[in-house]
Length: 471
Image 1 (tube, rainbow, N blue to C red):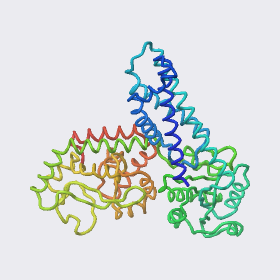
Image 2: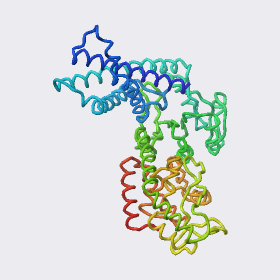
Image 3: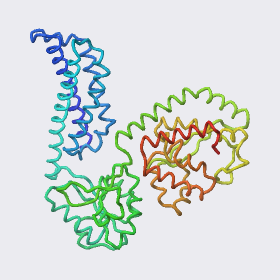
Image 4: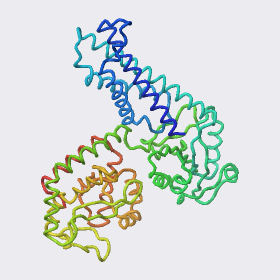
């Protein structure tokens, strides 16, 4: 259903872009070139018209994708649709104006203003009307219960039962299709069991979400269970697209990260599980690809020389490939230049430390200037890593960290990075104590995650590399 809906929006946006481009050409021919209606066919012999007809709609679709308008297409709000379409239209028309229209021969600058205003008005109107038709149809299907979202209830007593009744009896149906509930302490209400199946407890929640394709979680726990809210939210942190709602009584525990849901629905607090705006995620990924490609090309001589020195200075392979835990807890192969002697960990996983005898002389130099990290640009291109993000660790050490700092799991909400706030402020950790200490900087990164912070971390990393202050 969601895939078909996404296609509908893409088709409607493409159609709107084509019609707006055609309207602009007709407008300019009729008003600025004094073309007569009888000669209207000359529009279709204009090479620029056909080039624009192909590339302008593709540009609009790229802009909408970067803006995140093709995500969660079944949950679009008509009011937010209006503001998002208006913002995208302004940005897109400005780009078209300065890239395609600014060099046109004109008799007066008023022609520029009239072309800009005409395209903005027509493009926005066509795009929004077509989107509004699709969105309104979807809203009506949700309200008539023809479309719903698999929902999990966290809670098993009176409040969970009352929350279910509130959602079912609210004036405007919100689309929650309950797949079942999980309990907190093994106790549950018979009235709730009569309504929906009991699927397990908190330890099973990750599997339950994946098995039932859960899109929304409603946390409705009793007052004496609030101390477990942190554990509940940690268990849900793996899922970026998951919508998490909490009964209002928990407001004081989550202040600063929540907003109230739609006014016609049952009063629940909606937690924002996305750390950045959608367009920032898109720009971050584009920057990862572009900078990694440039780095691998520009640093290719350094890459080659480093590989030769490693091969000549100590026996063993040039590259060191190790399994690390990344985004959403998924393992991946991380690539580095080998800086240790072979079989350095024959007695088991061990963190490096100052004056570590396992590190080769050239390896010590590589670590100071971060040369050993260059192959990780390949991981960034693959999408298993980002330029900036918490450093990935091995499962062996993660298990030890979790016994002391369960909040470490929050770091798996983002892709691991070549460099990080913790890496810049603290450096490499030589034991689990230092890993836990470094964790607070990486959690700060999650709380303040933005493109601006990424740029600052990259600049500080460059300074550390130039000064050779790595360890």
